[in-house]
Image 1 (cartoon, one colour):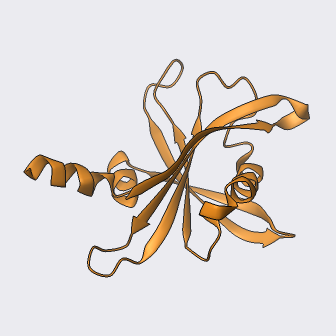
Image 2 (cartoon, rainbow, N blue to C red):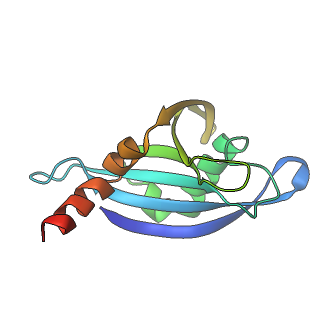
Length: 138
């Protein structure tokens, strides 16, 4: 797993309000023997975001991320999209949700469908669990 992007993305939310989210892009391999690469794009709701949430702006953010980080996100690799809400005030538990976009129309993502991921599933998807296990063996 390689963390290719770790950034704060400013965007215009609903009604023109200033909004922002965290963007992390991981390049992962499906297996160690014959690396079949894929990307995991994580959109994180930031505690100091006073604008539109990553969930409400989901399809717009996915389109913006693809355009802004086109050298990373394009290229024919499968992309897995994840929304991340850290634990914090008003939110007891950290959450991860996979997001699938059923269609693209006019080059834009549309029709998001969410599914909850456990923390372990997220760590496996981003291969962080494997990296932690390897470090523990050393």
